[in-house]
Image 1 (cartoon, helix red, strand yellow):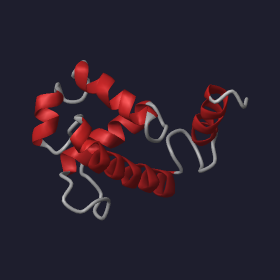
Image 2 (cartoon, rainbow, N blue to C red):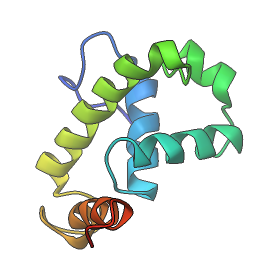
Image 3 (cartoon, rainbow, N blue to C red):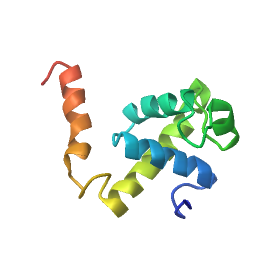
Image 4 (cartoon, rainbow, N blue to C red):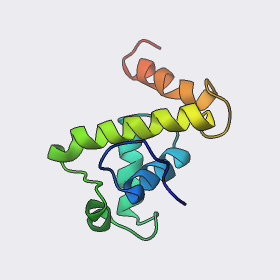
Length: 110
């Protein structure tokens, strides 16, 4: 699968596709998607790649790489939601609303 142009400057197509793969498995935003990305990497579920191979493609999980990764995830997720309406349906679907509900519950507000 080829990466779409214009997602993020300097990001490899493989990095973008890895984020899309994880987003389609768990259609949430940051930081929930970070957990899914770590899960996928630790089990080598994407092309058999672990954290080392992903680091070579521009996906780093260290504390120092987190701001760049968060920005890249944000850009890819925004594009996915805009162009595809998110996984499984139109924009505004349950997949888009669920993270907010979970966050409110975690804060004791829900």
